[in-house]
Length: 282
Image 1 (cartoon, rainbow, N blue to C red):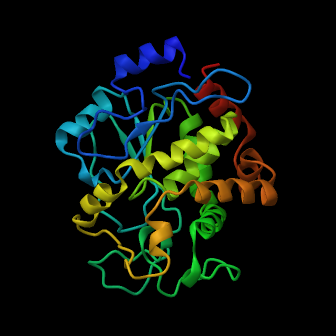
Image 2: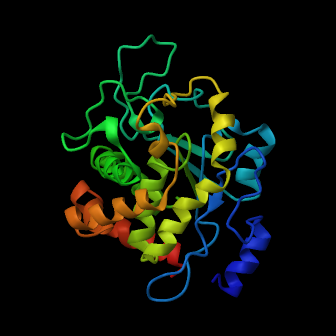
């Protein structure tokens, strides 16, 4: 349950009691504040927000990010040439932090990312133990682990930004705001000590408007799309609890904890501690 302080802050900042941001252009925009911590208390509202592609935002929506929500940094996990070219937003620094960003030989005017989370599956071999032709909701979680391991530099850099002076409030996104974004948010919430079930529930909130969200995204230019007929499509265009649950389990098996994973990837211990204090309000 959100604390009284969290409730009042949410009311002031325009975050509804379901953590949704008041951005009509977006369907998957929410704050990760108010989530229960293992040792008591909740995460702070107004520190970290997540959403789908901001290519859907109108100028008014962009103004709300900085004016209403105070966003100062945007962490863009999309691959090179995925989505519209970045333009400056007044008062906000946008960081392009491609998670995989493997370029293919496609023409320059097309998205060329080689990124399964962005819909590029042809010829992609993430792991010898993962058959992209037979990926279910659990297999999606295994893909998440491989994506995190290959994209660890971008996640370490994201932590560095968040822990830096003036690093928050911040917004993180990819295209759908659930796979690459979901991995980073799950790592950050785990480091903060958020209850596992709350991390899973935050991930599955994407399901609430998922069909309409993809309809909007699919109408945008430069958006890689997973062929609906591809075997990986049902799992990768969903947000099943089994996917993030599997990711968290494999993370623990392979790396011990989210903090251990980030430390092994090169994160500075003081950045981890600063992030914990920031999101926990300590």
